Length: 307
Image (cartoon, rainbow, N blue to C red):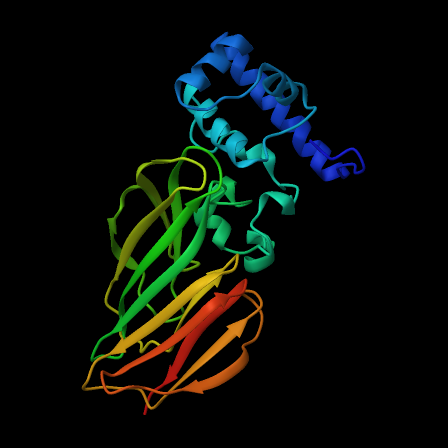
């Protein structure tokens, strides 16, 4: 609900009313009472009050907190609705900075209002990971002798910020000329869903965690994107960071074809130009790396030049 000192704008109110209509219709089709819904949600590990459910179907409030968004996913299953049906009526979400980690930025702020990222993220574009935050990311890119990026392995430390976090969404964006992923290997969880949009270059995966996490618990998830063949040489790799974390990026090149120069850079958002471009050394492996112990929200990466 909106805080007492603020009023939601007309767009938010309209979204709220449409959500209430859709929820009432779905409940009516299943002929379930709110008490029965509350019990079935509790059986699935989500405690939502009768008053909250009543407010949702009356249009007095809508799900926004992490626990509420998880309850919404469970409601879709209970009401026999296709995944994402109710989430569609929550757009555009109202920004709630106090539910994000301090200093975090929204998906829209990072990717843009009409980003093709939406094509793979779907109706949950407001926040794909409302129940977990990333504390640390260690990422390794592998560039082969043909100067093509062939794989990206990321090990991430997650912390649960709401009770019963059971999934994590990861996204890979292929730069121009890079191949789309042909496989995703996961340790510390299982791939539950994979969405790909070749037109935009984005692929998203929903990873079910090895076990549900309680608030403040941590988990380690490793995911390995295997990329297909490409005739075009790769020139960069970057990560979209929404909240402050530790970030280590290493780019391994084939010994036969090392790049001429490597640079680190950052961008404020997806469609912004490079800033703070700075040359970094290439060691004998050959490998270039970028280490940010307090990586601020934005886009951080390494680019390179070939002979």
